[in-house]
Image (tube, rainbow, N blue to C red):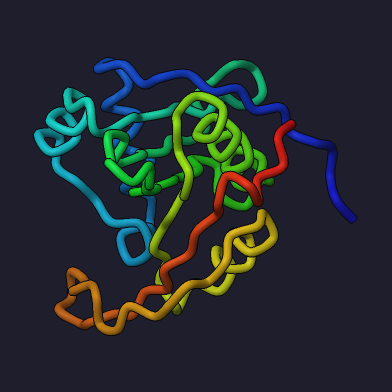
Length: 167
């Protein structure tokens, strides 16, 4: 049985959000599926016009997740989801947060194709992406070298503007 709907609002991240972002992506077990950047890498991306950092505000108006969008100036109007993290994993925030991010991408940018890469050994995330309209486009074989040195496959997925259902 589904719980009550979670209301999510978005705001652009500010430099003061870096501590929250770094803590959220460093949750146990996230490194394998999400990855981690240094503070310097985050600061450089936040300062770049080619990236957007969004903070998902959950119940009580507190930060509950973040998303990093890349390639905002892509000549073909393709924008990528670099990373999305819920600081409250397993509490029903992730899917409403991703829905809000998708809506923001298509409402606030000229995006034609919103794409992402997801590890093939993350069936839960792949299911959520498919449930929101993302289509699996192809396998990226051994595309990522994980921290332990193992190679991992990723699935390329995308959602086209014409497939998006505006709120």
